[in-house]
Length: 494
Ligand code: SF4
Image (tube, rainbow, N blue to C red):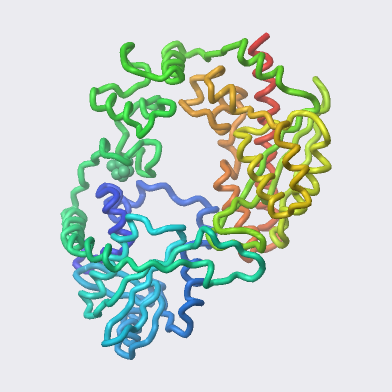
């Protein structure tokens, strides 16, 4: 590794979370998964929020941040400092560490105010490390920092028409907290640089809190000693405490969990199924569930997007806005299913049209089946709060909802192929053999990113058509899949 190696703020925060992860990011990036095409959609919310925040500090100099202009950027940063100019993205280097300030504002007596902008709704612990790192680099590079501020999104803001920047952002003085973190920065940087330069991969401490084979993108590497059906798949293992305990005692496979190990009822069913290789079916309970259903049956699923900056009038930050739904209707037992779908054009507010269509298509009676029904219920209620002419209809609709998640969540049915998960993405393939593996869009998060790409970036018509087709296929599988699952449940209790 050359002496010109720089530790960026992103590296630093990554190294704080896990030295091994920093190693992968900087020395073996091939270990980490390649972002899917939806992640590379050019819609970086953090950057967007940063740009918006500049409206509250107008007239600054923007420092180019492309890598090719790196040198130029540093020179420009120094120039704006020497001329006492307000700047955006000014970059500085000190002691092999590199940091940029979202907003750097001149303060009295030759000092500066450092303003970090975040797309979160509050100040979080990591933010102090983040700003302390910047302050360390900037003071090392010769700046005198007066105050450190964190600007974040105001959760209580409601956008009526035009965006009101003064209301959208909250600015908090975090100078005191940052001062407490500041003395720890040089030691941490030194330690990270030493590890990276030594060329030896740090030992992966997989038993530390926060490290889990289910939640880290480098897990396949660090947890390679685990079998496929490992103990971290235990259902609802709070804090993964049982899994850590089992691993520490040399128990890796679900099948190896000793008889006397304390498990919840659901976990005990899961382990039993793992040992026998057979599904668990509580026929009476499934029968009771099926008896609750009244025809016509309506299988409903929404896809939503949420942004820190409310994109639509009549909405608030982080609001889940439905942009698509799929609705399968089965009029009578054995009847043919009818499919309705809606996908927003990404131009106008989709909510009034969704409400108007659903009011017609959901009829006056019959069960509305959703997987994790509270999500669909909340979307309908929230939309009708925004468009109150639908409120009464929405309220009356609620008792008709039935949750298909219920028999899975209560383990009245469990299949070993669910791998300890009751989500539709696990139960559908386990029960019906149909799944999302071959789909271009595999989950709700990807669907949301794909839609935002469609709605908020410049795409050609063929690109738009391709995304629309993929979204339609994905959402349709969710509701079509629920019909299949209900069929399977009926078969199981015969
Ligand atoms: S799996 Fe654990 S040890 Fe490995 S990089 Fe992730 S957090 Fe670090």
